[in-house]
Image (cartoon, rainbow, N blue to C red; front, side, top):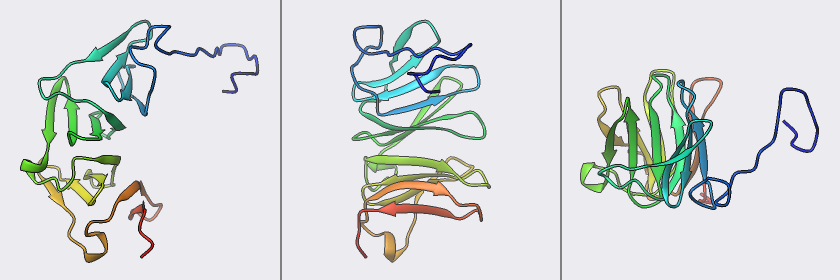
Length: 167
């Protein structure tokens, strides 16, 4: 929707820290099937229900949210700048950090393949969470210590990504 163009049935509203949003920045946004808009920010995860913004508090301390993704099972995946990867499934949060096998706590992008595996790009490669919710770092010499910026699912079902490497 072009916010400068007036169309019937649409409106453009800017939210910031002066109009209800509890922070002045947003790095990621996603919508779950129940209609909640989730916003990732430096100060954490924010839920918007169409009327009010609420900062989501977890015991694990999800902060500095850099990426959000809703998978085929309507789970909200959360990538952070410094506390790893998390998934929220019906209010329960599961997190992966270095002690859980994650090589880097910095997550830039999250996506899912056709088989239901979830991939997260990190500052040192690619992590994969299988259907049993077990995390694995992909082992490939081309990915060792490579800053993977973005991941997408190709039309042929292959996971493709961009890196900051010139190799």
